[in-house]
Length: 308
Image (cartoon, rainbow, N blue to C red; front, side, top):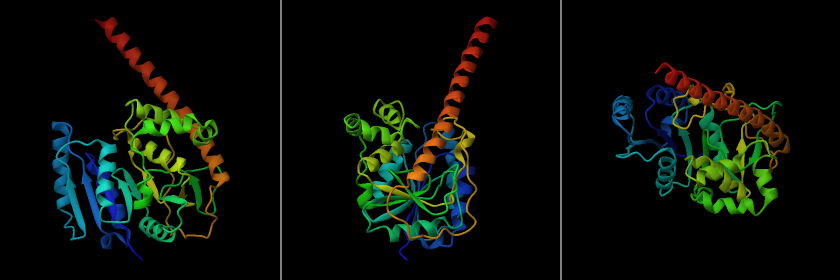
């Protein structure tokens, strides 16, 4: 079986990166895989100090010749770090597995990802493979497909990655001119993906993931999900640059291998419906959290003014 290179994007979180690499190391395929670790450049002196510890840690791993450390000399930001990094990797490889430093993976994550990347490579309807699986209200007994892309422990091929449209302004008119497509993109109004894309075009957020999702969605590509999650997100502790404060459930990692079952290559309407319910709840929780956070800031501002 051809092993895809594993690409890890890191920045300034040593503890998260250590857990991420430890979990990858528990995968039998890891030491035989090409591994690229991109460390984005620091924004300030605080980041420089944090990155000294990260570099000491990485260089203490006694990595073999399959490992390559790429230290950026300037701060690209997460989106550009991912986009530029993958464009570089795809100059030499036709597939890749991507992990960010706040992800912990199952010992069977790389097995599933590599098997799926090999199995579905020639099926053009499949745009990517995903390792994280949402905690839906109904238990999925088989792997399933959803339309679009995703970002928590994923893999894709060079020809699918080249569908990625960096300019959100070019994606927005396609949805605006097709209300049915826009409604499907927002899962029937369950989650404001289109609004996120608009915010990206206005420079209010910097998300490669919403552009990747929109690009694959417009191209009518599918992403394969395991019926039980092989990825856990550690970034909900507030340490991430783009952490929104939303309370999200983190499924337990699968302790067993995920078998590639023979399923129809089409979107699971059942999974799509329950994902809409899940995201609707998460969006409401996140909105209330953000609203209360704004109220707290106003309260503290008034109290400080009164104190003066």
